[in-house]
Amino acid sequence: MQEVRHAIVVSVIVAEVLGLHYFFASSGFVTVVEREVTVTVLLFLDSIMTFIIFTSIIIDVAYYFSLAVAFSYIGIDVFSITYLSSFIAGISISSFIYFIVNRSFSDTLVTNARNFRPKFHLTTIAVSVGFWLAQFLLFRSPFLSLGSLVDVVLISLVGEIQLSPLSAASWLSLPYVLSQLGVVREDKGVCIGEILGVLRRTSFSRSRLNVKYSWQKVKAKYCLSFENAKNYNVVILGTSGSGKSHLAKKIIEKLDVSYLVFDVHGEYKFEKAKRLDASTISVNPLSLFGQSPRQRALEVAYMLKSVFNLGNLQTIDLYNLIFESYQEKGIYEDDQRSWSIQPPTFRDVVVLAERKKKFITSSAELNKITALEPYLNFVANNMFFSNSVNFEEIFGESYVIDFSSITIPEVKYIMVETFLRALLSYIYLGKTSNLKKVVILDEAPFVLSKESGEQLVERLFAEGRKFGLGFVVISQTTEYVKKLISNSAYVFVLNMVEPGDVEYVSRLIVGQIRMYIKLSMRICES
Image (tube, rainbow, N blue to C red):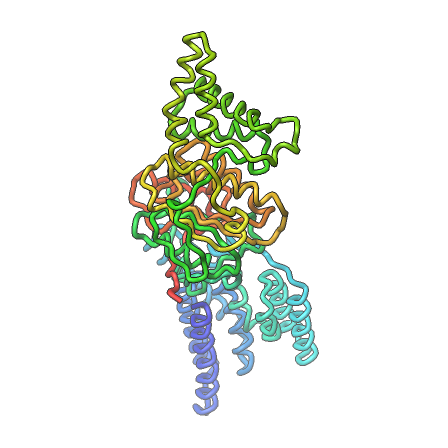
C-alpha cells in the first residue's frame, strides 16, 4: 500500500516536470510571470495532493525536497519565497480542513512511528554508506549528498537491507524511506495470516480524556516471531465459533516442533500426531515426578482441595494420610534413593485410612477420617491406580490427548493436572533456549478455575521459556487468563461479546498500546 501511494506521487511529479519542459520548449516564449504562476499553482496543488494521500505534514515537506531535485532539471528553483509560500499555503489549508472535519489532527507518520523500534544491522549500514559514497563521487553535489546522508541514517534505523539502494537517490527517495519508520513488518517467523489493518492512536486531540483511535489499512503478512520474544506463550480469546481452535492449529502446524494438545471436546485432528483416548488409560496422581514425597503429598492434597472444595483442616488431614502412605511403601523424605520405589495409589491410601480407624479411640479423630472417605473412595474407584502411559514418549513426540469421552469433570481435571505435573517434571530434564515443545490447553478455564491448576499453569508459563516450552492457552472469557496475559508473547482477541470482557480487552489495548497492537487479520487457509 505504501509503495502504491508513493508511486502515484512520484508519477505525478515526473509528469509535471516532463509537461513543463515540453510546454516551455514548445511555446516559444513564456514570460517570467506566466512561468511563476504555473509553477506556483502546481506546487500548491502538489502539497494538497500529497497531504490527502499521506495525511502527514512531515512527508509532505519531504516531498518538497523531492520536487526541488526534480524541478532543478528544468532550471526551476523551488526554494524561492514565492514557490515556498505556495507550498506552505497548500499544507496549511489541507491540514486545517482535516482538523475541522475530524475535530482532531493526526500526522500519520508520527502516529505510526510511536511504536517504531530501531533495528541496527551492520550490513545494512555498510551497504547504505556504499551507495551514498557512489552518489557523492558521481554528482559531487553537497545538496544531493546531504539528502543521501539523511537516507543512510533513516535506512540504518529501519534496518532493512533492501532499502539500502535508495540512499543513492538522495532527496527523491526521502519520503518513501521516512514512511518505512511506521510500517508494520511481520514478515519473519511463522506466518499464519494477512494483516488487514492496525489500530493506532491519534497523535493529537482536543481532549486529553478522549483520545481517539483509528484503523489504518495495512497489507502485509502476519508472522509469529519467537526469536526475540520474551517467551513462547500465546493466549487466544474469543467466543464459541470465532476460530480459536483453527488459529491454534495453524500455529502449531507451521512450527517445526513437537506438540501436546489437551483436547477437551475431541475437535483436534492432525495427520502427524498420535491420538490418545484418555478414557482408555489410567494415571497415578501419587507418582513423585521427581519431587520429594512431602512435596507431592502437599501438591496432591491441594489438588483435591481445589476439586472437592475441602476445608483447610480437611486438606491437612488428607496431606498427613498421603504422606504416611509414602512411608508405608518405604519412601522416605530423607532417603532420596527410596524415591525410585513404586509409589502408593489411592487404594493404598483408602486401606491405610481403614486400618487407622480400627486403632482410633477418639471420636473427633474418627470423624476426620470418616469425612475424607467419600473423596478417597471416589478417586480410588476411578482411573487413578497406575500409570499405563509412557510420559516420556508422550512429551517427546506429538500427541493429542482426547478427554471428550470422560464425562465426570472431577476425573477429567485430576487427569489433566497429573499430566501437567508430569510435564513440569519432564521439562526440568534439560534446559534449552530454543523452542522444542508447544502445549495447547483448550478451554483453559476448566483448569485455571481451580486454585492448584491456576498456580501450576502460571508456573509453567513463567518457567517454560528456559526449557524450550511454549503454551497456547485458549479461553472464551478473560476471567481466568488475566494473570497469564502479562506473561505472553502474543495475545489474540478474535471476538468478545460480554461487557466485562470487552471492557477488559479495551483497557488492555489502551493501557499497553506499545506492547499490544490490535490487528484486523485474515487467517490463511493454506
